[in-house]
Length: 411
Image (cartoon, rainbow, N blue to C red; front, side):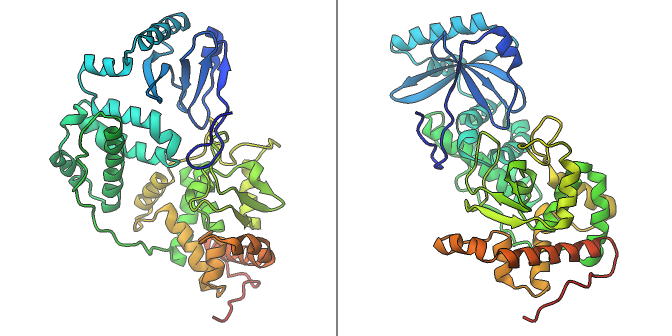
């Protein structure tokens, strides 16, 4: 039985098959990368990425540490050749050699592009549930400049030059963190000796306090339609439920029960659910306005899957890009998807329901046994608050008078 992962989630049982050319061609991508192990040739694996890319890997162990040797693209190398190469690798390991180290020595040092890809495949996808965001930053800001450079040749001056060229302070900090994570991992793998990101100062950033005014709420609610059905639905659901953008994008049908959205705290790699940010299971009432949106998306009665599923079956993404385009189109000050969540929270307190209610509904929790007992204690109150807040937001967004059933409480 496979050992649990570092985050405590159970590891998936390895997929073992006697591979055939037909099976290789029909391997379909999933939300997370996975490997199919060949039962005929020990150590040979077909690695399937979420993008649909399929590649051959020869896997072996040196001093108890797994080594993944990239053989090549499965579209270019047939199954018979992949088995032959994997057998040669097994013989070399038996003779005391390390094919991965030998390959590095033959071609010289790893380029940064190769290093970034190894970090992604061998570490980030397995340990970091936010790997997609970091990978986007690496591919957009680092690969174009460093992709072909020897990873060991990159200096602190190179890092400062790239980070200094990024205008947005928060984005610059995220790119710096992504680069530093790659080099820190590379040190542990004996690929580089130092991390050039060490000593590079992060930009000072101010905590955002941006919330939509009533006028902006009216403008953006209408502008959402320009982002397409899925992104528009996701953005409206963030406003109506106050949940985190990443969690809304990954909303799953099997988590919707009796009007409630029940979010497991821990990630589930098999389904692509990322888990909640604080690791605490969360239960939020979906108001009528939110259910109207969800019902439009859930045509059919499939019991599982993403509610906001793209054509390829994965969760909708790039809400931030959609918001940037919207702000430019309507000439508005910068708004992010998280600002929509903040607007929902501000509406809760603005209607007089209090900060404790906001924290409870938006899953700002410190944890502890009290959370377990309080989960259902506030069920009726949470339901009433969530419906009232959603009705208030929709009334403003549609340019109507505020509904009579919204009562501002005394604080």
